[in-house]
Image 1 (tube, rainbow, N blue to C red):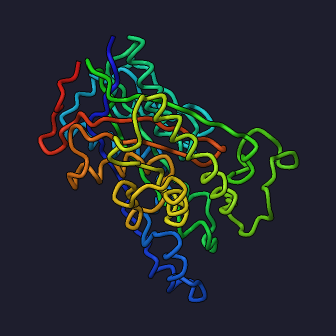
Image 2 (image 1 turned 180 degrees about the vertical axis):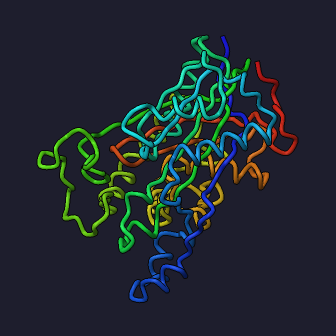
Length: 344
């Protein structure tokens, strides 16, 4: 049997950068310093009007091919996680297959998940590889949440950022992913939502839990999301450890979805984990939804904090309510851009 291993990751951000100083100049009455202290975010990347998730995804994938010498013909399956597809149909992954010049014999699909999406994508890739259907999966997360946010929305515009990350998941002889655990509580669907644009008529659409404070298409009930996270994620962490047959002290890093600093501080306190094992790295990139984990992983690879042999936990949580976690042991050598443990 072959197992899934996380290979190289390539990240792409739009060219447009939006800083808190820029927002302060545009809206002098916004308490920018207080907002930044809560979010932990100093700047975000914003897609242009005609720049969509597929555009960001394409750039990330092209960078992966170019920088790591990945042959397009070697891709067996394309997984695209996005909540901002180019169209209701066709599937954006099908458009990317053609645009990237990938083989027509591959599988390609979108899956609509937000902050838990990367871990879900890893589980799908892991299942495909373990099942013997494929050997190499291209997993892309790409989001343009900014298109759902009104310019004057103080609560959302200061948090969400657009980005894409392309991750190569390869067949290997030894397992490096373990202990997948999932969680779903659809009763929380009304805390983070866009209730227009689907097939359900507006008059029958799901309504937000509390009043709609801003004119954005996107609605978020921050306090409810924090409460859900602090209540649900510590149990998920314990379940992942149990499923992966690991002890808490064996985990070098707890890599969490990078939502906001306030939420992560509450979660770290609930988990009783030291700061050095619970990295928060969203100041310069913002909350990129399904892209936060691969971006964080690549940041830590580049800073040489995550080296071959490092044992981490990956946890995503949020919109849905949806959550997912797994254990990950690093087998890729970013410095030398090669497998530390030979792939299968």
